[in-house]
Length: 208
Image 1 (cartoon, helix red, strand yellow):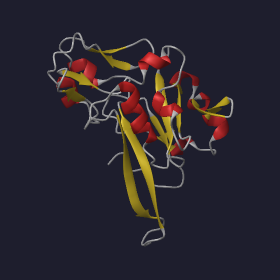
Image 2 (cartoon, rainbow, N blue to C red):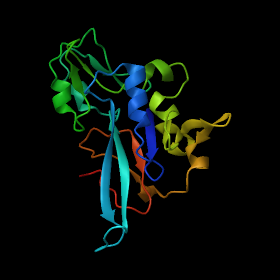
Image 3 (cartoon, rainbow, N blue to C red):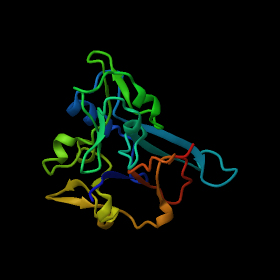
């Protein structure tokens, strides 16, 4: 069973916001709204009691996590929010009545009401592209080559990233080695978020 997701190597992310800009451009996201945000975590001391310049910062990208058990789907009164066979969570705008129950239910605050169309929007994982065998725009335009897309059932090591030369990068071959303890998720409140984040040698603060 397929479940598409994105893995972000936070040690490689440089916070350039290319993913956010590319997403807004290709998906025509309204001014003031975002399908993909990059949060700065830190600066934090490298060692306890440390002070500048002995600090580190990393950038945490937050968007729809295309959860396995999304609460947004459970609370939708019209079934506008639904799960496709590829595991992605989508919104049927023709069924959406703009009640925003889904936005209130989302634990990550990544849905919003399009005031002009009066429908709720969010990251679609570029469904119009991945259905054609392409990568999501935020992955192909990642300046730090930190984002990778693939099927969780195939293992995150197989996830593909932006092209380097004439070939796509592969997470398990391109990135620095990592342990299971280096792989994290945003808070799981029973929804089982699909996206993964790799962070080595630093404290994961994605639960806060």
